[in-house]
Length: 296
Image (cartoon, rainbow, N blue to C red; front, side):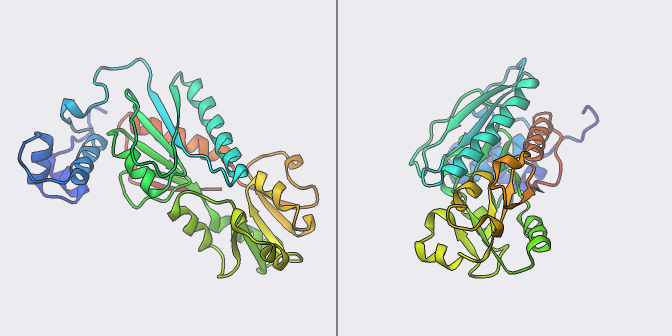
């Protein structure tokens, strides 16, 4: 990386969408400048992302470490135990992969819609899983390290994002079922991602399992149904004939889905591997211009 062009104040200003003067005020920690907290945080995050030297007071640890510490921040959904199970499945895969590289892997459960967040010191990178926008802003604003979002839609170039390619999975279901089917998913905390899932289906053909009524299940009684999630598929089969189900499953074994249903494989291993590779590149200051990745 010795031949890599060093970032300038102008580069930071352009990426952060602020003036050069604003960047200078922030990086030099000048007092009296009327700069909002959100602008200050964005400038510092961009500076860190571009490997520009930021004020010592904002660094979570300046000495070179023998190993990196990665924090995974997540919130479990009480009304969707099947979704919680998939989050823990993903965390388990991430922990296994980071352990192979001798990285420290720290679990950081987050209380949904909290008013404040106590940052964990010494982290070199953050992986956030399915946080709503409010919680994500509270959490991410406390760190100046690479942040990677899983199963989330965040409208900010600062953060790497990896999520399921629902359009491709729906297309595959159409090839198996035809076009007349419905989609049932768990409740996701991240509003943008939930909207992304809903837009993959025509109006009236998208359901959130925990919000469905008896009338909704009655409506789908003899319909073809696509279910997003291995464990959710096991729940839905109580109400929908297995012969009418396609389960988008993250598990390889067919024994984990209703035996008479069809299966579309959604490769959670690919999602975990991609997350690890992107985080490694970010920690080594190798930045890919592409920040959003879809996998299935």
